[in-house]
Length: 76
Image (tube, rainbow, N blue to C red; front, side, top):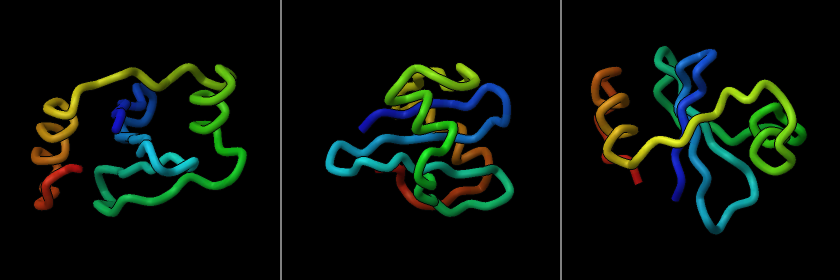
């Protein structure tokens, strides 16, 4: 699994190997949600288009950020 931080919004984005869609979580909505078809995250990840806001982060960085938000579950 790969993790990214959206430097514009602070969202955490992840790409699971077995799924086409990306998933993201927001600080004020602590639930992973799949991206919609043709979302800006998908356009940036797959085609290099969009806001260029996704920056790679490690699993440990993602876990630390989510813990600081109060997210209680272990990140996959």
